[in-house]
Image 1 (cartoon, one colour):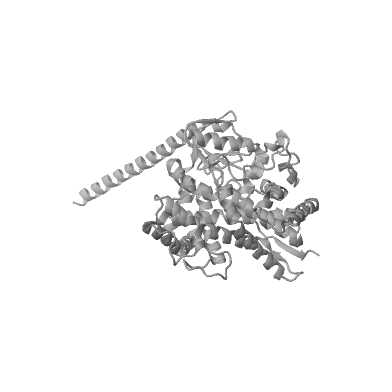
Image 2: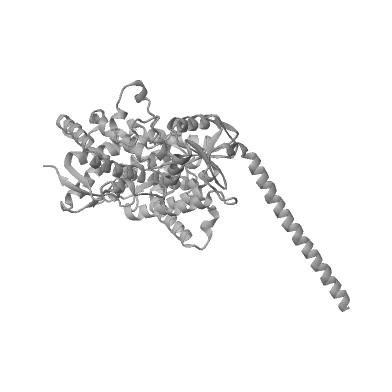
Length: 518
C-alpha cells in the first residue's frame, strides 16, 4: 500500500515538474515571440538616435526619475539637444519625439486630417479618467460634435462680450497688489491662478468673479480647494500618460488613490448643482427661470446644455472639470513668466509701457476697441509662450498605420510626441532664439509673418481657449504696466528653476516687488 502511495507521489511529482518545465518554457516562448515581434515591427526605428537604455526596461527608469523630480519636459528638451530634431525613446512602446516647429505642425495637421494619427488610447483614457467622456479624450465623430458645440462659445466675437468680466477680474488683482506694503514681495503665480480660475468659472459656470457676490445656483468658488483637487487629477493624468501607470491602480488602497477619489468627489459636488440646474432648464425649456441670475443664464454651461442633447450629467461634469483645468494654469503660469521677462528686459518693458500709456490717453481705459492698438502687448505674450511653452508636449498621437515623417518610416502603434521647449528655440526658425524679442511677431516681411505659433496646437484641434488666453493676458499685462514698476525677488533663477507636473510652472511661485508708478 505504502509502495503504491509512494509511486503515486513520485508520479505526481514528475507530472508537476513536467508541468512546471512546460509552463516556464511556454512563458519564455511567449516572451521571446513578443520580443521578436516587437523588434521586427519597430525595426525601422532602430536607425533613429536614441538615449542609452536598459536592455529590458528601455528608458522607463530615466522617465520615471524625471517625472518624480518634476523634470520630464526638461528631459525631452535635453534629449533633443543631444540627439537632434527627431529621436526615439523606449518606454513599453517606442515614442518618437519631434522638436522642429514646422515638422510638428505638419505632422499634427496632416496626420489627424487623414486619420493616420489619432490621440493615443492611453492619452484618451487618461483624459476621460478626469471625470467622464470629454472633448480632449475623444477622436472622430465623438470629438466632432463636442468641438462643434463649443467652438462658437470661444470664438473671438463671442468672447468680446466678456471683456468687462475679464477686466473686473484683472482689476481685483491690481487691488490685491496695491494692498501689499511697498517692500513686501508678492507671489504673482497664485494671484494669476485665482484670476484665470475666476474668469473661466464665470464664463463656463456663471459664477461671479467678485467673491463677495452670492451666486444662488450653487456653492461659491473656493479657489484653493478647487486648485488642489485639479492638481491631484493632473498629477494622476501625467502618471498614466508618461509612466504608463494602469488606470485600475486607482482602486488600490494607496494614498494616491485616496487623494484621487477625494478630489473627484469634491469637484463633482462643486459642479453638480449647476450642471443639474442647466439640464433642468433644458428639460423644461425655460432658459429664463426667475430664480437664476442673468450671469448663469448667459453661461456657456446653460447654452451648451440647451443646444447639444448628447450631453448628459456625467459628460457635462467631466467637460467642466476639463475646462477648469485647461483654462486656469496655462494662462496663469504664462503670465508669471511674462512678468518675469518684462522685468529682465528693460527695453521691452519701456516700449510696452509707452504703448499702454498711449492707448490710455486715447481710450481712457482698456476695452475691446483698444485691442488692435495693444498688438505689442500680445506679441510679448506670444514671445513668452515661445520660450516657456507651458504645455510642453503634454499630449501625444499614435500611428494607426505606417506613416512617413521627414523621410523616416514610423510603424503602426508608435507614439508621436514633441518637445515644445526645443521647438521654441529652433535657430533655423527663430533668429536669436535665446533672446526675448517680441518684435519678431510683428514683422510684416513674408518670412517672419509665417512664423509658426504652435503653442496652442495646430489645425482643427487647435486650443479651444486661444482667444480667451490672449484676451486675459493682454488686459492683465496692460493694467500692470499702467500702474506699477516691478522687479523679480529671485532674479533670473525664477525662470530657470522650473518644475513640471502636467504643465511647466515657476517653482518659487514668482515673487515680485511692485512699486506704484509716480
